[in-house]
Length: 363
Ligand SMILES: Cc1ncc(COP(=O)(O)O)c(C=O)c1O
Image 1 (spheres, protein in one colour):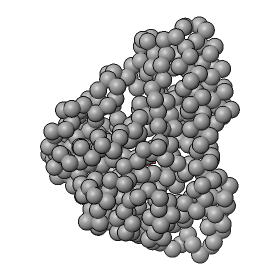
Image 2 (cartoon, protein in one colour):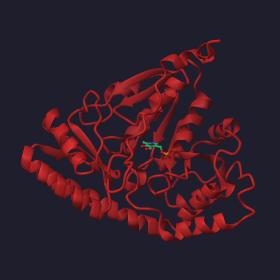
Image 3 (cartoon, protein in one colour):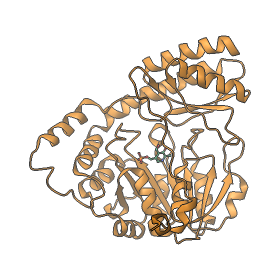
Image 4 (cartoon, helix red, strand yellow):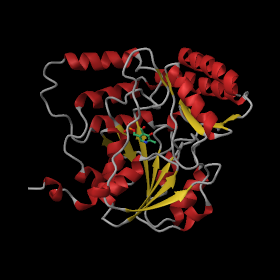
């Protein structure tokens, strides 16, 4: 029996998500994954620890609809964002990856058209392939802005990452509003990195019915491992997302940890302000080199442009020799760039020293 013949046919051409390289030994500086530079603050760790000590807790199923967390998101986390306020407008997922997956489950029939931009977060393409959608990829302009051709598209879903991975810039609300008003399907704005930005489109949700905003606890709250993401949208959309999701998609410890993150958010934001200040410092430093420019970023990473591909690769490999990992995309239009996650001040100092010594060789 040929088991492969039983697999869904279109999986033959499916390529799964490529996870980024993780350091396997101690002593590496990991600036290629866009994790938060800091661990969760101690108040949140204490709440997680005391939940783990509660013997009766682990044997119970978690709240399938994470009601407490949904309330905390609306009443506390987003209360000053001028956005939706009814808890039927929030969906909780196992990371925003699952939120994105659930959006596909709700909206996409095989063959439906899905619009993605290039370059952007690669997961949209992976999911579109998994659900056998027809992908319409639109190339961003050279300055990573949205091209005019994006404004007269048809399709079921359109994905916009704001701030966009890998360049790091947010799209302004006028652009998003204009896209939503002409697009006949659903526009998904992925704001995984938006807490490092001054821009968010959350306020548009009150008036725009075909908009879903996805957010994550992974980056802002250093909770990538516990997997909590959420979507805000019209109650009709959220109801359907809750109907199709797996029953116990998020675990109780993660729900509780996310509530603790919300309770202690101001302290976390203070910690994140250090990342924002470091982003400025690092950008200014690297912009000082001839042949290198750093793109403006609203995220916890910067996109560094080199004059040519061979210098870019020399920096990539020499940094690696010095046990510093940054991200290179071997893809059209991106060969001359390195994406660098903002680390702690100490990590960034080491990165700058290393960069300097490499620059002396090649620039
Ligand atoms: C743009 C973007 N969206 C979503 C995600 C997924 O985040 P989560 O950890 O919440 O699944 C990532 C993760 O790197 C991301 O870069």
